[in-house]
Structures are given as structure tokens and as C-alpha cells.
Length: 396
Image (tube, rainbow, N blue to C red; front, side):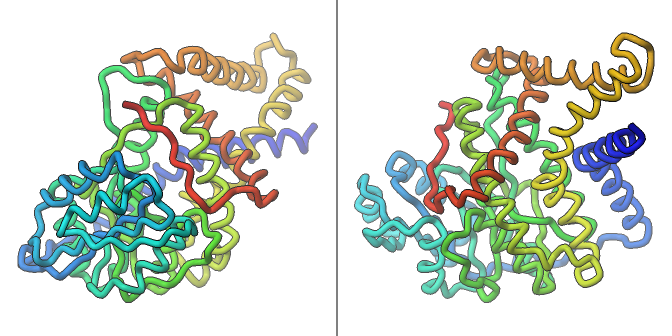
């Protein structure tokens, strides 16, 4: 029983550190850094306007072409310095033909479908601007997003810049929208502090940019291209910076089933990434970057979901030995666990009912998030996750 007690408290510590503790530690480290290093805003940033390529890898995105092009052409950046490239490999819904109506767009198309990363590897060979900005076809960018991203590249040590993913917010929302929106708000805060401490650990595929010279062809079976590309840039000694005002907006998944499908794929890709980026676990070589990477990413995709799973039988065993209805620490913790999962069950019951009390969906979304890691791990081990992206249905 002593072993179970020790294991129980170690697992609780890992879970709390992953989702709460790291944020607290990060906050105080950033505060400490501010005491010793005052930030000095760069001068003449308005004049820094290099040529950039907006790179959009798309598969059957006909429904989004008009809105995306309207949004892109309305961005606050000199038109003569903005190159718009669409790679539409495999699209057979009329996307390439529709894009050819826009003289501002360069359309690269092949009939064969080799996945998003295949399209990126092919298209990047033709990019000749110093900075390339990746964006999805179904996300709309904030008007100043490109200008704000580009400004950060004026610092020579910056190799990648991540924008912010924003989920369309509603006064009332279903579980997928409420949970996803709250999660991304918390993630955005952590990214902001990560960047201030040293570097963000991974960019959001909806909107991120790199120095074109730092792009390295990625393995054809890569599931999380944005994560691998950005962290390999960081491995070369550059930082990944973040501007929350450079943002991409998209609607939430249509329902939790669609969100789970999306997250299982991301989780399988996350585990694949941990394996491929295992050298980043060497804290003696990468220092602060390794600390941030392990704390913010690796634990979420490996130990923490396992701990959550094992805490249920461990908590029950300890509460049983203490007495399920007798006052005691383990009894209280067991019933708190049970209450949390009852709240998650309530979230499932209310899944498709719009409500303004969005906090009700947090336990459910948290449960779905960690369930997706377990299912993603199984899919990764079976090698059954296809590299071809099957887009989750989005809410209207």
C-alpha cells in the first residue's frame, strides 16, 4: 500500500504540474526575467517590409476560396510584396479552376494526392521570398496579421513566428465550441509567456511563418507538419516567437465527435513528433527550450493521460483501505475524482445544447482531450493514421 500511496502522489503531481503548475512556474520565471532585463522596442519597424509568400495548402476547399481570397486581398501589407501561393494537389471539387479566376494567386496543382506535407514539400521548392507564411484555407486572418508577424523577423535570432488561433466565440455554445474556445484562451496565455521566457514550443498550423532558408523537407508520413517544421527551426538555435494580435479565426468543431476525430489525429502526430524530436529531450544541450518542450508538450502527450487513467483505480484502492465513507484525505480525493467525472458526464449530456454557462463543458472537454491521447497512441502504434487530412466538420 505504501508503493500505491507514493505512486498516487507522484501521479497527482505530474497532472497538476502539466495543466496548472507549469503555467504558475512560467509566470514567475517571466516576472523574474522582467526584473533583470527590460524590453526595448525595436525602432523603425514600420519600414521593415520584406517580400513574403502566403502559402496555402488546400484539398477540396471550393467553399472557402472566395472568402479566403477576399480576406487575403484585404490584408494590410503592400500588394506588390505579397505573393499568394495555393497548392491544391488532389483537389477534384473545382478548387483549382475557381482559383484561376484570381490573377493575384499562383496555383500549383497536381492530380495526385500526397497529403498536406507532400504539397508543402513540393510547393516550397518554388518559394523565393525571404519569409513564408503558412495558413489554412478555412481560416480568416486579422487585417494586420502579416505585418505583425513580419516585424518580429527583424530580430535575426527569430526563425519562426506563430500567430494565434481564435475560435469564433458565441454568447451560447455547445460543448465543442465552449471547451475548445476556453482551452485556446489558456493556451494563448502560455504561448505568450513561453515566447517571453525564450521560445514558443510549436506553432499553430492555422497561421505561422518561418525564414524560407530554414525550411527543411519533412518526412512524407509526418502528421503534425507545423509542429515538426517549427521545432526543427528552434533546434537550429533560432527562437519561435508569438504575437496574439496576428491571428487566424475559425469556427469550432461542429460537435464533440468531430473534435475528438481531430484531436486523435493530433495526438497520434504528437506522439510521432516526440519520437522524431527525441533529441530535444536533452536538457543539457537545449536548456530552456527542452524545459519548455517537456513541460508544455511532452507530458501532455505521454505521462499525464496515463496518470489520469491510473489515478482512478489507485484512488479507489486507497479510499477503500481508508474507508469510502470515513473522513480522510484519500476518501476526499476519491470523491473529488468521481465528482469531476460526473461533471464530464453532465457535459456529455449537455453536449449539443447551447448554453451561456460554458464552464460546464470544461471537464468534458478535458476528458475528451486526454481520451484522444490514449486513442491517438493506439492509432500510432497500429500505424493506422493516414497522412491525408480528413477535415473535421465545423460549426455554422
